[in-house]
Length: 98
Image 1: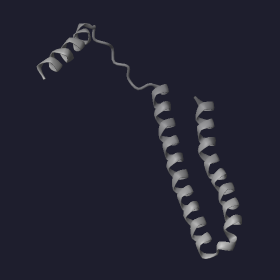
Image 2: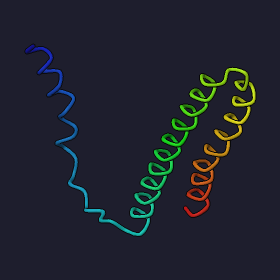
Image 3: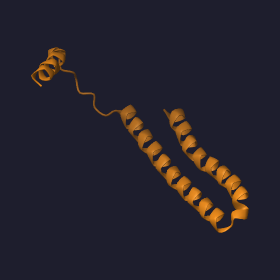
């Protein structure tokens, strides 16, 4: 344990030798990056919830009527592609705006 503590202190020595930096502050770019992160997180969360609901409904429909399972699967895959495209459009808009 003493050896580990000594090793950690040895690695920390260059950090204490550096000069103090200046405060960066929150500029326009920093707030834009923060907003982009929140918007992508929000879009991903909503798309995840929508995909879960779509898969749940497709599984329930296939369980109620097994003869429609093939058609439900095709419709579900198309629906999932549309839902996922919303998150991808959000990501494209973020990259275009930044």
